[in-house]
Image (cartoon, rainbow, N blue to C red; front, side, top):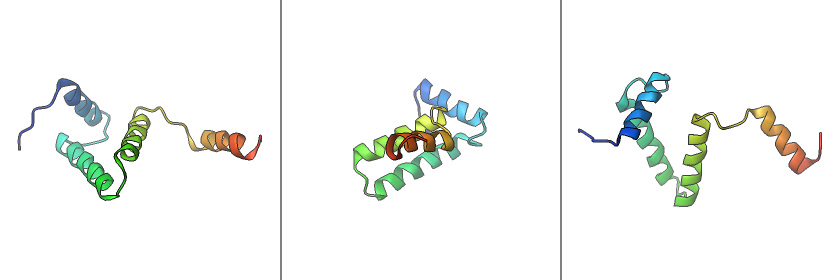
Length: 82
């Protein structure tokens, strides 16, 4: 199978390989399709699946927070100040 992809997708794939997340473009595509298939099979509605995909993309971009920061945030918000 031969695919034509937009330049920004090709760049993304190249960046993922350079960063060591995947060894080949085929490995990245296979992983992406597995995630997509699992989301479809899980019975999640489109909105929930999209939210999960966006959260994973944010984490890949380093926009998440470490576990201790998250725990502190949740504790202050829902349990009371620590």
